[in-house]
Image (cartoon, rainbow, N blue to C red; front, side):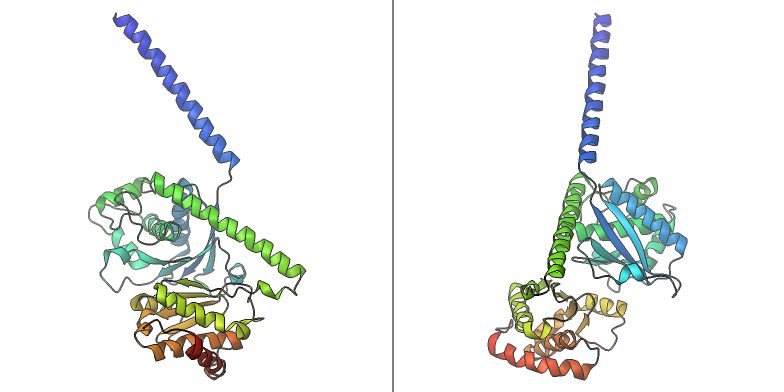
Length: 357
């Protein structure tokens, strides 16, 4: 009887091994049939982290993303030397591009959500270098800085690909890292969950499709410059309420004639509304020290607004139209921007409903 049980056990074990191998080969075949989606990470090293530390962190973050099925390409846009080549970073942002800032210091608030850093959809992630350094000095776990910094980078990039407020109770997207998480990171086991990996791959593929479609559209525009309808008049609004979004969209669309035929005018204008503290951190990163509630990036066609400006209609109207004036004149001079802003402001008063009503 025991002999018969032993034979049956060995047969079952062999069957399980064969099934496992077949499943693995099938999954491998699926991966070969569908190439891994790719994102490009533009790195701005404001913390002046050493080249070796940053390279190690990029490798670790790239490995973690790779475990989720996403390939990452890293471009250092701001490094330790001012004469480092930055040409690849001068291009207009593509859907697969994300910006990573390694910031000095640590979060100015005590929220657990932002100790590692923060992410602003669709394409800006920031990590705090000093907080990563602090985690390496834990009495419970000794871990190298590139490893923990790489995990922090993967965490914030995860927010860009998974969406906001997407923390989990396990894995790299946990909101707070204690000794248990540091031990997992040390072993290379602090990863995205299976479900998160599926979502990340889907989002990366969606961005790649957008880029492919964008390249096709730009090709059509190049072939026939007479297609003026290619101007992307509908803006992308991020972080606003529904009323605020309607108001901001109305303003940008009213500035159609002023913005048409300006550089990159076939790209969508993006308006991002930020909590005031995050706005201040963004302002610092862009060295826009003179601005109080709004600033712009002409090259990226983005306007950044502090949520505080929505407390007063006149302040909101003055700031948003002034920023659009910079785009209309393609000038950094305030008086030039204000001349164009006056025309837009007059139309807005007549045709756009206040979001404060």
